[in-house]
Length: 225
Image 1 (cartoon, rainbow, N blue to C red):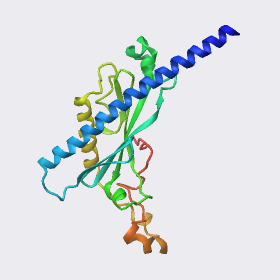
Image 2: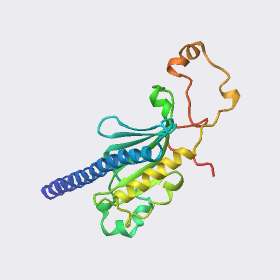
Image 3: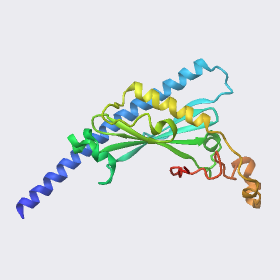
Image 4: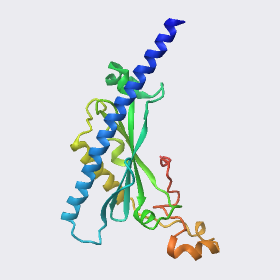
């Protein structure tokens, strides 16, 4: 019984230390990423002096960064927890992970795409897309699950290091994805019924919910391939 108790104590100690290391690394990466995003937006403004093109940096607390780019806002959110993958996930067959299972624990930075007006006009019913999830381990190696180019440019966990070059690429690809994903009007029949409350509040609260297309969801988009 004492031997089993000692093994539990060691397990708790090792797991706690590991998760603290992953969290610390992810937080450092996130802070550097936030700083780079702000500098990128400043650089964009120098190259695009036209004030009609919205370029703005903002944040909400320590774990959420807003990058306003044109008619969009990209939200970079660091999760406060550490995650791993299910036992049957292909990542466990990666030779890099097989060398050290502790490298399979990750902090997460989520990337969301919303319409800028949804935030600027506090349209709380509007929704957005999760376009990418950055998984960062204790050694700053990372992979990304995401939409478009984010889904295939950052798949090599062994070679991907979360440095300034990677951050710049991730941000620029995210901006390009948002800019190319245009607002589409929903089918007429889907928006033809409106109640009095919505009409009375539409001018100041824009309560009729808006997304880039019908079915614009906060969760990951369902693949229709």
